[in-house]
Length: 200
View (cartoon, rainbow, N blue to C red):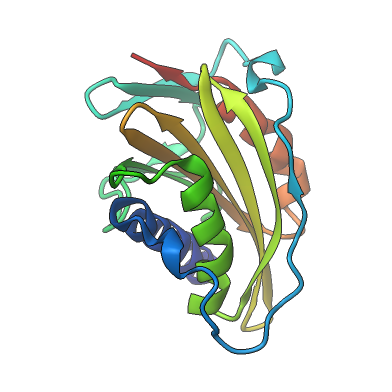
């Protein structure tokens, strides 16, 4: 599972980065083979701040402290975050992971445009992806979206959850990846990490 989890987390983050900086939402409706049923997109939910964050979580920051969050101390920070991330935390021996990125938004591109493009373009870029749902909410005082993907490849089933937070002219991405059968046991912790988000 290790290589697959890493590969697909990088794919999701890389495509979203390109969409954000290029304003790529304009190509969402182009024909690209058979259309897949569209997963449900939920309206804005309550703020993630309602979720309690354990006091023992370890603080992290990116972009010189512009964005801060907390995560379990047991999650190991990678020496090299990877080509599309500014930080990578490995969660367990199976390389379940959290990858963090900061993206400058193209003029006229916001959270909803980037999310719409991500929902459409990521499954087109790799047919192993299926968009499983999107939810809008608030975290750290910023508009946010949670985009879920189910991934099946080489006999492995993964879940990828990308949380995008829009703040000023930047968008921050938290991409959580884990085996599908392990994801439910990690989901509450993922929500706590998101709830800890803060901006300078």
